Amino acid sequence: MAEIMDLGSGIPVFNGLSEQELKLVANASVKLEKKSGEIIFKEGDSGSSLLVILDGKVKISKKITEGVECTLLTLGRGGVFGELSVISGDHRTASAAAVTDTVMIELGRDAFKKLAEDNPEFGRKLVLNLLQIVSSRLNTTTEMYRQAASWGLQISGAVELNYNRLIADNIGLSIELLTGKTIAGTLLKADRTEHGMELMIKSDDERIVIVPFHAVAEISFPSRQLEQKPNN
Image (cartoon, rainbow, N blue to C red; front, side, top):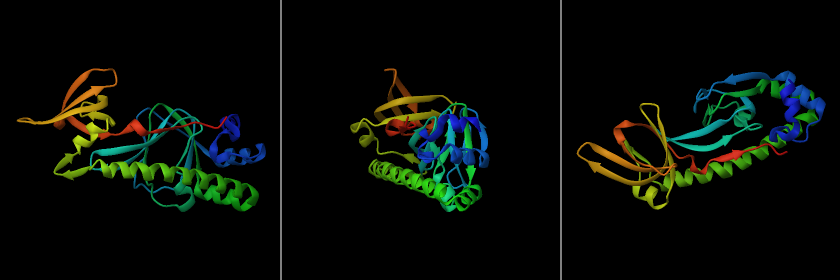
């Protein structure tokens, strides 16, 4: 697969691999294409493969409560995800969705194991690279979970956020409406009215927008997302 050879060892999980070893990966992988907004997999899905982005962007997110998710990171060209499943074969621990039209390669667990067994030195390099990625991701996601807990996300019939904390900390958020429209910005005020909760948002383009809570489909917190880029 020519795209893998083009990216070469600039892909973190393939760091240190020879051209011949990259060819082994290319031959054992399959190409996947997803449209912008398309779900790649959901948290809790069964999974046994890792994926590498050849072109496009992918958002990795974790559900905090019903209807509220936390964006852990956004990956671009050369980004790797699904690495835990290829090691353990466990269910997906987060969700992945294409942010733009995206092209990826998928390396299944069985193919990964066979490559490692047939080429022990290659397998050693690949496992070490995966462990480094997992270690880095754990540091990031642990901090994200800590912050999510401190924001006091709760669910009691409808999702209620610790609005005062969100306002005080000037936390960036993204609100997806039931209409499909998305509003990104910071929360200025949250009021209970006779019609229900209303959120006053200062959007990223400096507009003030009033959002009735009953119109909200999903709230996410992308302000602390990581952009992973290949090490060129």
